[in-house]
Image (cartoon, rainbow, N blue to C red; front, side, top):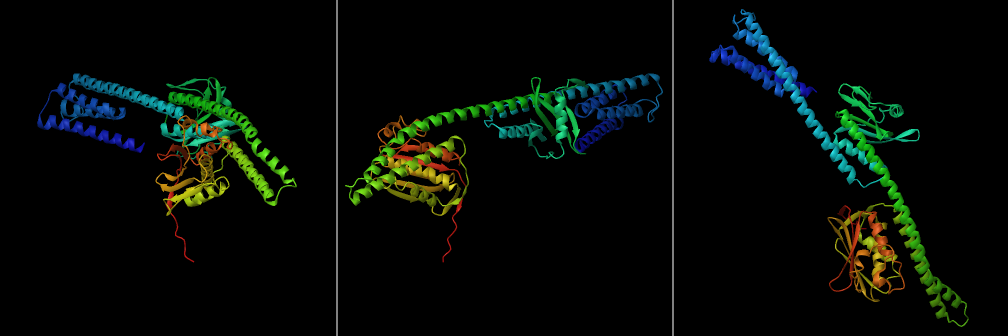
Length: 511
């Protein structure tokens, strides 16, 4: 406000100096005495001032021009008195024309400003609608994002979307100001209770539908309005800071209400999809368990019966006991996969990062699959020994373990599995290469789907088709990814990448 007043005073000073310059030029240099020429010139100055300045500046300029006109060009010259009565008519006609012209110019400028403001408001509403459509989140976080979009697009210092939850209000706030403690629940509740009884009423040229202005303190005025879907109020929108026209605010409230309803629909759809996936997962898990439990349970039963046979030698008994332990380990792994898949599908994968060396992750993964990879040589290539990364070692090593188990399952016995790890600008990169038959083109699109085993999987009696899907789910919890490709020399290459900051590894102190 002070800056605007300063600019207006500068405009007034420039107008007065222009009048003084015109007057000095006509009186002292050009010696113009024709009143019509002077009046047209003064009127031109007034019109230019009115086109660029507020109405009060143009009015002051008009009065100053009238006084100069009288003092320097109407006899007796040098006084404010007028000898010829006709000159009074000319003088007041000049003042009336200049004032009317100033008023018309101010109205035209105001209309232009209002039109530009409406265009800006429409652009803001369009940008806000686009932000809403591009938001894919659901639930409370989406409403918090909506509040931030409203604050950003309309340059508001404070935005609060208040939704009723029982007897209280859940607030989603955004903006530079923090007015939560000043904007009381009682104030919001008062607007909420009057929302259904509010009727549109005329206030000047503005139409307000249940708006209420509240001074939360001496410096902050908050406008509260109901958020309506049709005739039904679903919440309260509170704004402060940049002034928004009432008509625009009504439209904004409708857009916000529709966005909230959309968020609720998205949340309901997400819950329905989760329920459907849960049902599909349960069905698939039951089918997988029915298939994959049969072989180890049968083997355990036969081996246990054999242990009771008197004709077995001590060596043969040891082999049967080892078979039981191997199948129990297989069952343990199966149930662990089922548990991990269930957590992934329900979004209950905990994530806790810490600084760790990539070689620690590889060693942890190798220890997890040691029985399954006993017939293979695992070769480790380290390309970033001097760097550590900030990742979740448990999730990353578990994801890598499933890739190692997959490589051991689909590559010939006694073949080499190569694990290479390095720290890049994009985070941690680990590759697993095997010497198997590679990946067929038909399997590639569905390779990471749960329970999909592909053409090669059908030729193997072990495996549930969950390993690669679990790998993808575990990495997704860290915003990582996994992909597969065939090697030129034969076999498959699986790569995982986890975006994470890195730093130089600390130097170990010598004892």
